[in-house]
Length: 255
Ligand code: GTP
Ligand code: MG
Image (cartoon, rainbow, N blue to C red; front, top):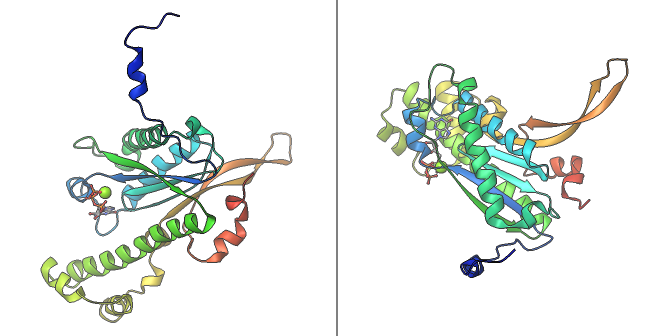
């Protein structure tokens, strides 16, 4: 087919293919969710419905992108780890981040009503998305550890902060100054001695975030017997230590 004289402008498009044989992570993060969570009356410090909606949106991404072997989410963010050798979109960085981000955002709105049956989003939520490459298995593990440590630090702080306000009657400014300079042991102590709360028994989804992985689950056949079916499952487990990676060594192995 004859090309138009305008065809040359295609050359202005940069080649953004990700380096081969590296882990590709696409992370999405809610834009201005401090405001979004307030406007939509998210419970403080954690809203189980909102976090479950995030998990549902992330499931949609994993259902569509089969090369995502693991996803990790907490607060208003989700990270999607593509297999090292994925050829999805010829590894084009913008294709990966925009498709993941767009699907995540539309699924967040699509499933909103299942988690917030009595309200509509007051305005369209926005998520940003980025693609980051990690060359070694240690790097990808450290990346995920970084996000889970962030979850732990923020959740312990937020739990103590809001307990001081909601149960202790402090103002936000008073709670902030009480927590200034405290270490995690101090916050655990405040929760336990003043409010009888053992932080370690708080729900795991809040303390550890959510890991999505594919597992082979036996399903019953109509004529008896079972067959294994791959399913995406949600787990709220530690991914910083070795145990998870020893039990799931296939995740880091090139197939
Ligand atoms: P940008 O990402 O830079 O646009 O800012 P942001 O306002 O989204 O802040 P950030 O991503 O750093 O943090 C997420 C914010 O979302 C938190 O600070 C909370 O204010 C809010 N948030 C996330 N999850 C919950 C929740 O379960 N309950 C409540 N109340 N707020 C939440
Ligand atoms: Mg955000």
